[in-house]
Image 1 (spheres, rainbow, N blue to C red):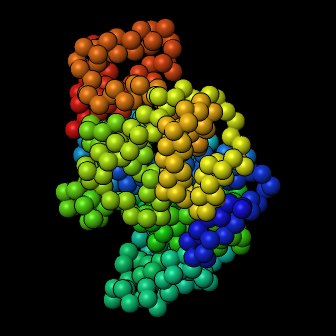
Image 2 (image 1 turned 30 degrees about the horizontal axis):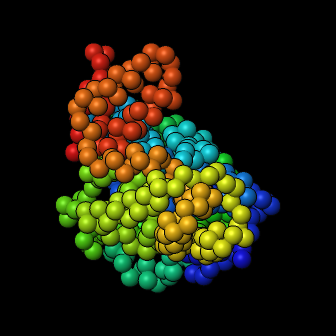
Image 3 (image 1 turned 180 degrees about the vertical axis):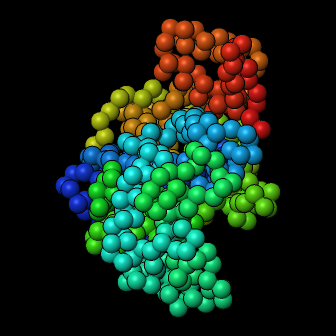
Length: 458
């Protein structure tokens, strides 16, 4: 069976057929870095980390791009409120993003472009759209995309122009020719800091959100590529607008397959700040270990809603203990996966049907039961190897099983000392490993000229 993926654009399962044989190019919309990452970000990062891991396990070369949005209204407001530069804020938040992602075992993408590094490419793309009559400069200086001039607008979200018109306001806002038009270039406002402004033929300003992704994916992956992904909340308007911009400029399909991960809920209510049920990754890691959190995300299918609760996370940890218990009782013998082996074949069949992690996880439990029955080191090795395809079961079993208690202050101090020694020896990989180990236990380090302090994540 070939790998099939649910394509949001066609609303059907489709076989993956890379545009370049043996090489998959994938773009996933990343974070807007004005605050710490939350559980919704973790869900998306883990989901597409599993995707790229499985593509590689399937023998494919993967170029994976996950962008960072480091300029927008929220970032400008937060920097002004904090009394810091935009760059200082975004650098700090990107560092925090990496710490959280590393703790969850999320592999770094091939490229992680920052929007502010691609402004010339954005302006070039806007110029192409203007030349083709799809963009215009409004009376207020903004440059807008003319939605009604792009045939097929709404094909990803399934929204027709008639449906969208039903929500129009009577007055056309912000100098737009049409309420449906969206901004490509925002003219600078007197209240905005200088580091939020770029020179252009349209005057000083900054890019709109949607054009950022079109420019970055086009520059790094080409005008057409294989997979475009992101959260379900991005399907409209962000991804719809990306299609309009990119395809309007190139005349080519932007992506062959569109993938969207489901929402995160809290006790079956959509998670949001306004409802007070909003949790950062660090909130979660303060109470639960990182691998159990990853397992909690993975054992639900990426397209389904993920209902977060402490009870579900505790159940995930107890379930993961069962797998680690099998590996603690029977030493794994390193194996190369034989995909014709019955357990491996079932695992592959599950993953090849739209990354079916619930079924793949069920195979791991069946395999663990067989390990317990037979005491086979080869089967234990297969369990570990298949777990590795999901970014699981690569730790020391006994350490995982003994890690129920929180780190005490003596152990924390010892690890901080070891990290300081590693930094002095310029062994930065070890220093980062120790930081991530502590973060996975909910301990956040704070470096300063006088030394390193710590606090439990709140």
